[in-house]
Amino acid sequence: MLQFQNTLTGKKEEFKPIKTGAVGMYHCGPTVYDYAHIGNLRAYVFADILRRVCELADLKVTQVINITDFGHLSDDADAGEDKMTKGLKREGKPLTLEAMRELADKYTKAYVENLKQMNIKLPTVMPLASEHIKEDVELIKTLEEKGFVYKTSDGLYFDTSKDANYGALSKKMVTAREAEGAQTRIGANLEKRNQRDFAVWKFNQNIGFQSPWGQGFPGWHIECSAMSMKYLGNTFDIHTGGIDHIPVHHNNEIAQSECATGQPLAHYWIHSAHIIINSEKMSKSLGNIFTLQTLIDQGIEPLAYRYWLLGAHYSTQMNLTIDSLKAAQTGYKKLLNIFAELGENPKGGENIKDENKPDEKYLNKFKEFVFDDLDTPKGLALIWDLTKDTTVDDATKRTTMLAFDSVLGLDFENFTKTKQNQQEIPRNIIDLMNLREIARKNKDWRRSDELRDEIFKLGYQIKDTEQGPSVKKI
View (cartoon, rainbow, N blue to C red):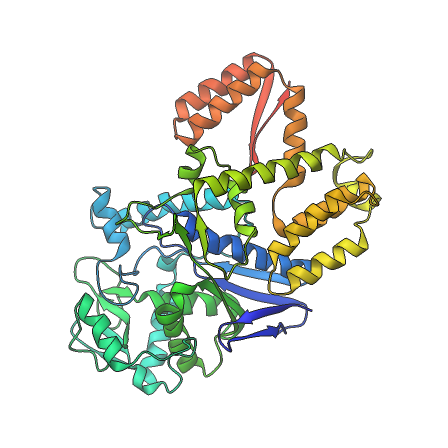
């Protein structure tokens, strides 16, 4: 039985999909004005585990992760500078929609590369906010026709006082005094009827899209509502995000969507906790933002970071230190080596699962853990118990570990193939291949091509795959 902690009800509940045998899930994606930091990536590892667990439960998954490429203001509500505009200024680019798209393309590619490095499955759909203006406008028109929207000098706002259920995800409704205080810090909008009201369209005479109300941008919240409903329907199964999304972004999504359609936006809301760095909140002002490249530069492999994340429940705040990551990497590499030493099935390849079935007792126990609100810490502990169990033969251990890895995503099998390939390839070729990878990471494409040609002249062919480079003798 699948069960998840539902933020909407505050309870752990059995998961009952709307459509038997299928699940639709939406995850708030990145605002692509800069590189994602490792705190951001935790939310996508969590989303990946959720997807993989649903697939283990024989559910057909439709997964949507959006790309926000405009309209996200710096305070996550309606004040501050647009994050994409901030990115354009930082990189000395002109304030145009074309330059904004170039910026978005750059950081979207970096984000997708991070997903691949973390062995996160790419979603079924990855929609760009800028390509869904039509859907935004249609949704706003519906809200306007139903009397939920009013106009001010800087945009159109949703009137929260007309939604009796506003704040459904919050355990405690924000009082008027607290809301007023929050707005004071960022500059109160005196034209709002209520300080909790939020923009569904912001006017901008310099840059933006045309609409019936004037040039500008849809609000950040309306973008997610429009995209999630376009690809999953007016009501769908699961919506996720970080806990920071609960008080503003997700409450606003619920309000505008449900007032427009009269249906619940999502039946289950699941939220992942933050990561802190050396016991401090991760923030640019403190200079402690870590990207995945930051970890790689310090000798930490991306999948070692994934392994570290799986050691705690997704709802638990984690304190990251380089020492803790290095300890996790040691454990992860030990586990990889144990798996490699179990040997290949004589028939090899994909037939391994047909020849040897997973140990039923261990697999059922693993399902019990991960089906119970994605309990990956118990799942990891169980895989270590399996490696030490002398009553299970090596072939069965290997197949059972692969079954576990279909959820954990630690990439056991590809590690083994890479290790075997490297054992067959001369050291000088491996060194050239590694130098080429460094050149590729640094986007030094000329040097990368030179090294590829050098490898070819020595009698070997290199191929780039989603799992990394592979090389074979010509």
